[in-house]
Length: 134
Image 1 (tube, rainbow, N blue to C red):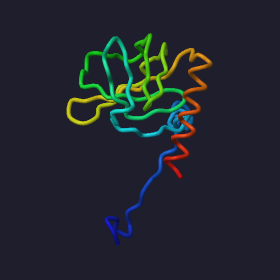
Image 2 (cartoon, rainbow, N blue to C red; image 1 turned 30 degrees about the horizontal axis):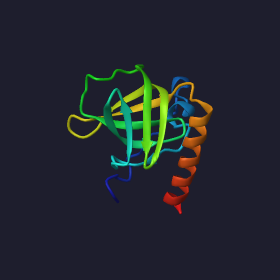
Image 3 (spheres, rainbow, N blue to C red; image 1 turned 45 degrees about the horizontal axis):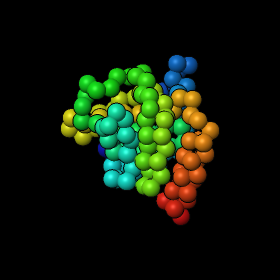
Image 4 (cartoon, one colour; image 1 turned 45 degrees about the vertical axis):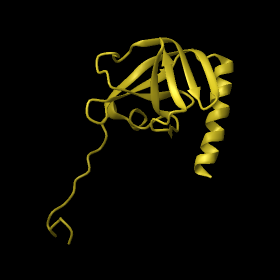
């Protein structure tokens, strides 16, 4: 047998009320773009390459561990998705996840997304997803 002996057993632990499945599973599909140069977030004249994107937010890479904190509000953001530019976005830092070496992935959730920006993101997202998944 693999690594388990016949008399060994695995025990599964039931999720507690404080760890419901909805808290563990993302609410939207994310497209990985992994630092491709045509996908980035522009804030205060600083450019951050994206790790992933969804209709409700995005993840971006940063080497600065003290630049952002959980819950920070980001104003006047611009997202560049290939040739598309979406301006005047507002978001909240939803997570800071250690990545390679000293790098972080910062997760941003959009706040009060303007209707035209939502339409542009949705259109891009659905087209990109269709091309990605075939």
